[in-house]
Image (cartoon, rainbow, N blue to C red):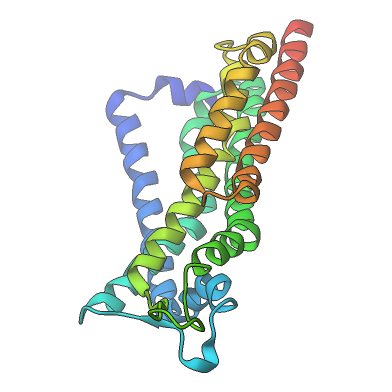
Length: 252
């Protein structure tokens, strides 16, 4: 479909095209959901590894479920979470197929990098949680156990559903935080912000980064810095991206 043909489409034609892309996206999610549900136990083991590595498995520490249906619904949540994650590139293709015909060639070149960067940055944020933040956070929380002293024994019995919810919140929080360059880059592209205005807002951005880290991470300095510093670094990268975008726009 050419740009001219896209512009000549009626409202009904546009809605029909949108319906087609939504149906394909739904099919992708359902098919991947079925596959993920089959491997839900393996996927949960993967998500649980940062905590399992810190537990005393030989003494029987692990995960429990206290409601009859909890394990089943936990696996449903796992399958849904991973189906959205794995289907996102395919959904992005459908989004691109819907909007691309209505864009000029230079607009396509401007928008495509942001679309490609979105899943990459989200994956980077999730990977940082899994390999760095989660082990540090879980180690801090496990320090409240009291197994060897003469006082009242305090031992973690982690529930499947609660652990999954906590892990997903961490992953989504970091994944969304890592979208900062994409959001600010798009805003710079449509001239809502400039690299100069971003520089002026830098001190407020640093405060917001540390406040966000204080709410999203355990109250130890290392964990808070592990979120705040990447956000500040991403903000600086966003300033650089905005500057490059402005220079390219001024040359045209």
